[in-house]
Image (cartoon, rainbow over all chains, first blue to last red; front, side, top):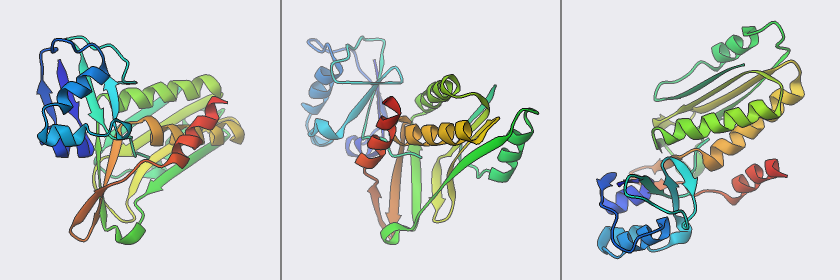
Length: 83
Length: 149
């Protein structure tokens, strides 16, 4: 799967994109978030407070309960501030 | 009905965009427009806009289609800038054309409300040498939510 990070999530993690093979036991966007947060460091900081995070699955807004597959594009970012 | 959606670093000419909508069809009797501008809040000197290429265009297209379904529109233009902008620079243009003003005003406001809460843009403000990501505002969520009622 492709993971994308934007705004301060990208800054804390230190990269904007990475590839990942769907890890064992990861079924939903929320599981993926917990898996990445457990890496600690910048990931731990970026994913510490899920209330400040939003996610997109294949370029559509989703909740933490959305099911992810290995061929998906998943993005994590703060609430949007355009317009 | 034609819809023009543009995400770009370059500035835009709001007057020319409005004229294009006004001339698009003989049935146009009203063009309503909104221009968002970088504000100098608490010493902000510049702003950098980041976005999610691909998803941005999809989100805007989705809400443009919803606006077309809700109101009898004759043309729509949405231009959102990205990259570094200075105080006073235009950020976004939304313009809607219709036979009468009510649909044009409503569609314009609807699209601005959804751009603010759904389109994946993020603003980084610069004050002197310091930078801060702009936080989302609950008022913006409320403004978008009222279109669901």
